[in-house]
Length: 123
Image 1 (cartoon, helix red, strand yellow):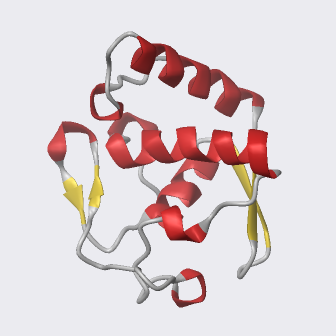
Image 2: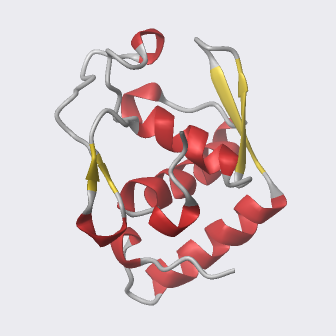
């Protein structure tokens, strides 16, 4: 079950911004060391600093346990902001037109002093 856009918080929005950077500068290939990864959920994507202590932070400071950045990427794909491709061991992301549009809104929000945690999704 995916987290819906209206519940996205700091972790979803910061991941979208990160994926956009990886698409622009690294052909969509993520650096898995930059992902919060629960090795129990995604053992094939775990790295030496994988950790299960950090839940996903949703809107309104709600915490979602057993949900890491790889789950957030799946949520971003369900929201049609990215395409989550590649292979299980070697993921590659692509931005969709809606994803680029949302990333631009995020950058504007940040440039005006906002934070990922207080970004408000508006259609």
